[in-house]
Image 1 (cartoon, rainbow, N blue to C red):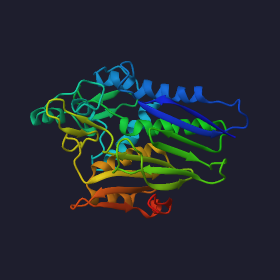
Image 2: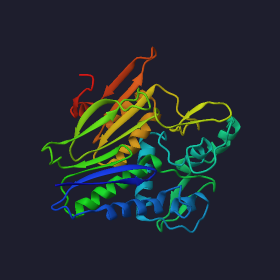
Image 3: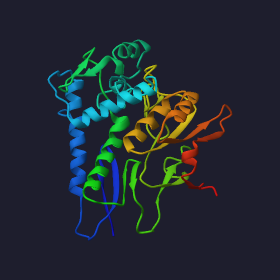
Image 4: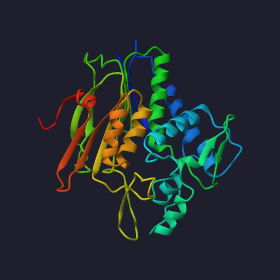
Length: 319
């Protein structure tokens, strides 16, 4: 039988289904414990977390395995994307109003440039004993672009240790699956939100089948901030190369990978990278497939799908 746990964590909702032998099996406490441990390590919204202490400039913090895992993978994606993926943009995230700190209204180019001077993943390193060394004390980490995916992977590993063979973990739209939906005796089916829709009504652009895979979707169509003085809209994904929120023709990117941290990170990276660079990198990456929705110069919707992703699509909602 399938058991379902729902709740609120990491600033969003979660819904987790997993197969149990009897109705008394309930792993909600274990799930909540994973969220708690990840938060204590890398939530910028918790003042006592490791990442908050490091961001404040404390130098005696010894990072845990959670932080190191996310840091090391961030370094890998940073290098493979030529710096377009950069979790050292925390100060910029705050300045533009997408972080825990008060935003700077009417942010000027001079202010952005001053923050950019100490932003860059190449300006930080971790010692063997687990201490973080920053070239500038104001350099600020923000692992939101892959921390949620990592937490999902940890829950999956917890289920694996308990011998659970069929599950689907969904946190804020990021998903990890294993096995099958035994209630329906078929692979897990997952819908992808359309990036062009009324905010009050959810519409799907594709439905895909997932088995032992993760999927993450990133887009600029839901999260944005409005400057109270100018009325300007700022999207939540920042370009680490410029210091400014993204403005491009890519509306959303859905990435399927063998783990959710990888899917999460690359979904963010592909929103920022130039379109042709994204396609080139996708041709080189193993176990990473993507579905990209964009607008052409005439405003028409365009779709780019890797071969691996195309094989997962069940049908189009328009059919």
